[in-house]
Image (tube, rainbow, N blue to C red; front, side, top):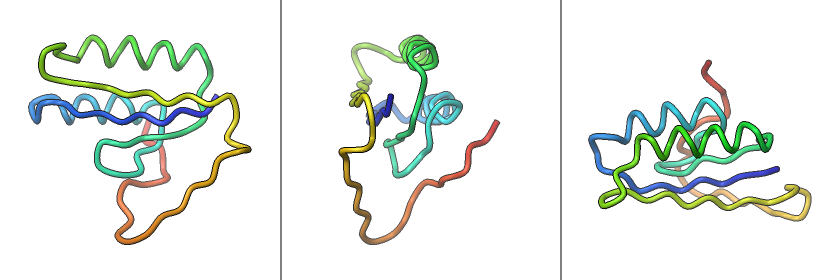
Length: 87
């Protein structure tokens, strides 16, 4: 499946959230990650992020698609994030 993750978290947790999410997805812009991910890893990602999250301060939005074939992505301006995965 293809996933886009958008998050808004307290500055105290931004680093932990980004580091966790980058284990599974590619960082493309501030608070935005995307990528192909298995169902199992998607569940792991959500579990790990929800452990970090403070319900009364943070939010996550997951957009899931069965395939990326019917999507289009356009970028303009300063490129942020990166395509490389860090292990």
